[in-house]
Image 1 (cartoon, rainbow, N blue to C red):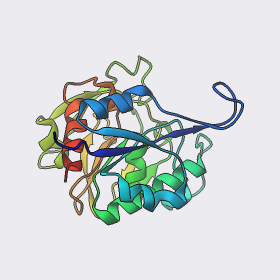
Image 2 (image 1 turned 180 degrees about the vertical axis):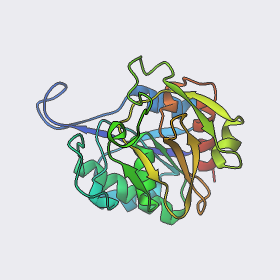
Image 3 (image 1 turned 90 degrees about the horizontal axis):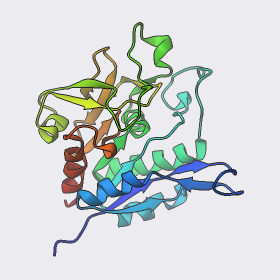
Length: 238
């Protein structure tokens, strides 16, 4: 039997209240199940930046998950923080250490939603801090309907890694973000765009698999969503 590649998934961090009176980690089950369905062995990664290299020594691929928080604008020269910006500095410090370490090793990376934005920043890109204040007539990127349904479509850029994985030119996607990638970085390209021009996906041109999507393929809203997880896990086989 072929060995299952070990896929590290980053966790979200919550303050005391709800599940526990102490700080706690959280992650939706469909992140793990979608990786398992793709043939990976998912494990959770607690936020210990000093252990990043030890984690990277053991895992075969890194999945950076989303969350209701933002990357510190100081990390990409974004100027003063917009009033809507919410930080989780400990989580970002850990994820940035993991992403930079994975890029240095040419380890496969999949960034989802906020994970895509962090990947763009690690690749030298910049972010839009608040779409409604920056993009006239933008779509509702914080979709009002359930996340299990599509919010809008994206156009897939031909000739990209994403295009080769999904095998089409358009996808229906769910949408849960108020920020977006403004520029992908000098060694990255845009691989998906919303009808209003918002960047919905980026990928590195220097690494074998460093891919980010703004939507949440773990929900399998489009039949091509699982192909993204499948392609990522295949790359993690080496």
